[in-house]
Image (cartoon, rainbow, N blue to C red):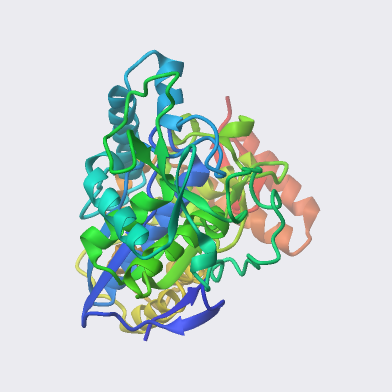
Length: 459
């Protein structure tokens, strides 16, 4: 049995698919005006781990990740410039060039993180007719009105508005959630279609029944998810920042149009904060890109897996150093294990139990290390069991040798390091210092981290 935490109900629920043996999943994709930062990428590591867990459990998975290449304005309040148009101006390129470059960059990053490719990556700009059709359906149902800058969804026509984020729409004062717009009937109303400015021609705009313009950010996800997965599908994921506005609006417009639930389970990954605990944000300049990390992408993936996907996780150099030490130790151990073993069924059962309990990768990583240290299991069986775990963890353990960067430490030096660690744990610090000196005389140095000591040749 698989249990998943559902944001909508605020509880863990037994997973039951719409179609026997099949899981239909939609994940909010990137807005391709710049590189995705490492906080953004956490959502896709989570989505990939979720997919891998289902496949490990015997399900087939249909996975859709959209590409937002139009309509996402600089403000969630339907104000400001389109991020794609702004990116094109910034780099002196066309909107098409910008979206092509950053879509390719996003896919390159996900490949580096060993994230499996989705079945579909639909682009908002390729699905304008579907979005117009959905808006017309909402219009026919009495859910829209026209303002000077576009067509808006009237949230007062959807009684359950705000149920995902537990928003009290009636009690929300104008300007409390978004910037003031005097033409909005309700502060929570949002744009379905924006009119092009008469002052400046956009690079991306289309004819519509309401005038030349472009779709709002939210309508694209509803139109594309329903196109590829149906009016109702199993799981919708995204970052927790999507809960109060983007996913709340998706639910309202989709369910107002169809009268059916959009997704049966809503799942959200937590933030990656930086050293001072603040959220990464391009608008603040407080961002780190995968290409700038001084570690391998799989080290970053490993670090993410050491925490539950819902938890905020704080990025620090120390944390990355410790993750690097841990994964190097894992790669080194596997490189010495023999071939020809079998999967240990007891460990497999325990692993399956923790990942089926709301994708508890933190416990899965702990179990992995328990297996590595279990002297009752042969090295060959350890190897095959770790490879089995890796079907979910996605650390590419079968190719571990190509990721090993640290010099192989001589066995006698490694033994001294272990003896020193034992002395430290026994609080025999005098003996620990003596061993450190022996290591130094042999031409090596040792640095202590939260994941254990790092031994390297003295510079």
